[in-house]
Image: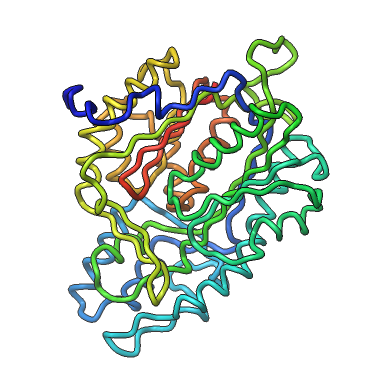
Length: 396
């Protein structure tokens, strides 16, 4: 893409948030539902829910095989599913017009289940950081799969024993890149207040929005999404301070996992219908256009090259690519756009295979794997969401 394509966009300086004092990630934790479903079980379930003819069933099962997902978790599962899914929430369609449970029923289940998964991830993040719950000053919750008030934030304060003075921010309905949006808010807090200790928790129950019927966009989203939660702890870090006592390459209790030195955003031109997420009468409905990989290939390299150059990095200097695995085609488009080595996105593909697409929580699962394997830094978080919006975060 020629540089002129960005001529009508804000200058990179205006959409990249440079912080003189970076936030330091000192803890990370993840959580998935108790029960998992294999790809075979998920495909068989999809055929029962959505398909009328044997031809439709064959197409749907072939799609599930192509996703690269081997298993995924759902709070609706009543046992581990190897060949067939047992649940009391989604009944087979009684007619071709049946669209399953209404949105209120789905959201009621979210209100019950989401705090449980969020608490597990947040507890693991606190344990990893070495902080006590009463030391947390700010709480950021991230979700696009359910809403209620009082919500997850209040539940976490109550269940974790956070101070009643904990200040809260909710990042809602921003989709798969929303962990970066949450990190940006957390980074701003610790940059402004060196005493701040921020807990950020993403929780997504995508399986509550399973769509009935043979609508292509709905079949694709059914095949990709899953449930999960992930949390981090962010504390103040002055890059000019003496860091000799801090080993930022390990995931040992109380040591830093890395510093969030910059975040950036780019709204792709002429892409407003490429990815959407809206509230319907029977859950939330996602559309994912077939042109998304093309848009990534067209715009990503120029934007990301400019962003990295401003921060003294390049495509070749990134040690860990935490690319949100929106699907195998999205990952392939990123590889092609950036001419990445064949194994650069192996961790993204591994998380997708093991858990499916858990929306905002997914990139933090990748960071956890980077930390556990001492992946060389810098790391780059990269995600895509409705807009079409590109969100990035540079971690050193």
